[in-house]
Image (cartoon, rainbow, N blue to C red; front, top):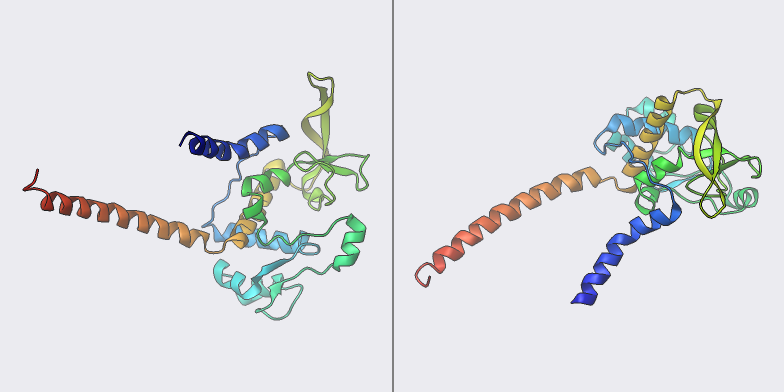
Amino acid sequence: MKKLILAIILVTALPGYTLAAGGIALDTAPIDTGDRESQARGAQTYVAYCLGCHSLKFMRYSRLAEDLGLDDAQLQALMVTSDKPGDTIQNVMPAKQAEQWFGTKIPDLSVVSRSRGSDWLYTYLRSFYADPTRPLGINNLLFKDVAMPHVLWEQQGLKQPVYTTNVHGQKVIEELEPGLPGRLSEAEYDQQVADLVNFLDYVGEPMKQERQQLGLWVLGFLVIFFGLSYALKKEYWRDIH
């Protein structure tokens, strides 16, 4: 039993330990799974800046329109890779050329919010900085030596790293400070990223909101059922006790 309890504690603490080992605290993504307008804005950002490389092969345009309440004009504006609403959302970049250009396979992002987590995505998209030593001139605090370019740099601008020396004498980044300004203010960019992450969270589990609502009903049923069962038990055992 002690070994089982210890194993549970270790598994529970593992995500926090990994985070501590990385040395970067994740920011909480300010998303709302029920905010369809935010997700629709995120879909527009995704199509404009992400779909060129990253597909969403488990999501269909028709499902997107139905869930997010998009009209025909809004749906047509998103359908840049197909003219059939029933098609899945595919990227336009050939896989072989992409791997040659970036040195790695371009991942599909259908379930990235489930594998990485919304907080990770939100922090990642806000952690790019200028790094002249890298082939593309950028790097990322959360994903060191990342191959992906900072596709939203025109909106955010390019941040500059501020270095310090740690207790081991190693040069590390202490913080990121404003550098080349972007088109959006910091608050506006954070909102754009939040909308994009909210959209990816929806794509990763379209039934998430319904599942959570159903879960509340199930818990309510269990509470009522427990009360009735307890009352019935007392009635059966009344003469004995």
